[in-house]
Amino acid sequence: MNALHTDRIVVEAIDLTKIYGDGKAAQVRALDGVTFRIYGAEFVAVMGPSGSGKSTLLNLVGALDRPTSGQVMVNGQDLSRLRDLDGFRARTVGFVFQMHNLIPTLTALENVEVPMQGQGLGERVRRKRAKELLDRVGLADRAHHVPAQLSGGQRQKVAIARALANNPSIILADEPTGNLDSASGDEVMNVLEILHSQHDTTIMLVTHDPLVARRTHRILMMQDGKVIHEDLVGDTYTEDLKALARSDLGQAVLGGLTLDALSTAESNAMRSILARVAS
Ligand SMILES: Nc1ncnc2c1ncn2[C@@H]1O[C@H](COP(=O)(O)OP(=O)(O)O)[C@@H](O)[C@H]1O
Ligand SMILES: [Mg+2]
Image 1 (cartoon, rainbow, N blue to C red):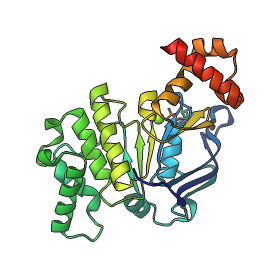
Image 2 (image 1 turned 135 degrees about the vertical axis):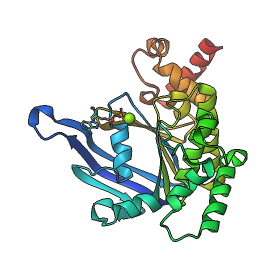
Image 3 (image 1 turned 180 degrees about the vertical axis):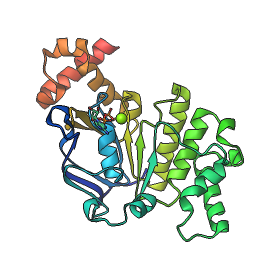
């Protein structure tokens, strides 16, 4: 198990606000004063209903878009002061989207090499690194297949290998399992877990699937452009307990209280009641 590098702040967002549209009537406050940090080797999920601002947040962290106000720093660099945004995106962040966006005429290997072009690497070095990355995501034996010859899950793994091409400080994944059946989604999550646990890759993952989010270490819950709640993911028992506490049954038992609102004694009592209900 890898250690969390709390001394290394990879992302720091301060009071981030993004307003779309200029006419007053048409304005959308997609992000409304969001502040958070992501540390080195963290695996963080961003959850929340559709339209709550998850993609907007990820795009600001990856400098695909600029905030209306507030600040994002990646590796201590204030993105608003960066002159070379293309260079930043190529070297510092690796994006994985819901749609894999692979180039259909290129093989898996060639797709992984694309971001390495123009980074001063020779052809042999690029090829070797692309092979290593395909191996890392478990696709060494599919290197010479074009996307149409790969399954959805395999394409998404190629997209992950491509995102790793320039050894970024963070992987930003926007619903990477959103288009996959649950078995393929599970495989893609296995790859992300391996990257995280064996290679200390820092990952920020947007998902609306609680089962996916539970496989990360921390969940930022968004609603209406705000982070309304932050949750450390615990063991399965604690997570089941939390899910039960949020359910109608749990809320009926708790009388509208949340587990957090209870004292330790009450919470322990609640655990044993819920455990009995659940068994
Ligand atoms: N380019 C845009 N122009 C106008 N409104 C946008 C744009 N992108 C997103 N929005 C709006 O901002 C809000 C947040 O969107 P988004 O970040 O995509 O949410 P999520 O990813 O959580 O579904 C939504 O109300 C959405 O309609
Ligand atoms: Mg989105």
